[in-house]
Length: 222
View 1: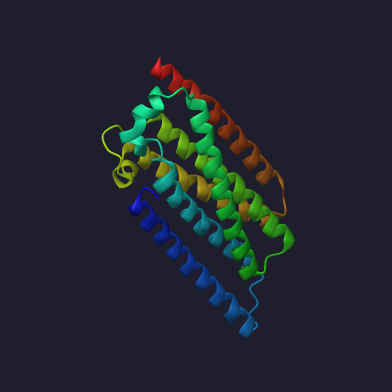
View 2: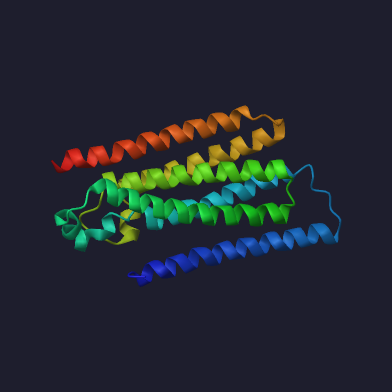
């Protein structure tokens, strides 16, 4: 609420998402109206909707999560002089963003599952993978923003086009593509191994990044 431009960006991204939901609703209506059989393509459509939803999550993370520490440029001296540990500030931001993005992600997954009339197994796969992917993207975005804060500007558009911002953009898109491919192969082959391996690997990466980021920042400040 302190940044009017940020509110406009938020409304813009939500507007695009609502347009995508409207497209899905029209698709589902036409499938029901003409009794089309999309059972053979349901898995592919699910994977496509999955990666589109991840695109929105990545956009939200790049615009709001990654620049969160750099946007405190004008008031960073307050946090620096206050008797607050960086770990508590980092944890507070992390819990806020992960809970918010998981809520948005579950809403996206529910809408897509309802439109495509997915089975319980497919919908469960999609929801679990979406949550773990969202958490990992938020974790890496917040950590990169904390490790490489921009001290020259607090403009999110400039911050997001910096070298760390471009790296995070590439990472989130590639990681989201891999996650969508895991979803597609797991549902198609009815095998839990790729999904479990991906979840465990993502959880380990998130834990390592979460534990390492505050320690590195404290070392730099000493």
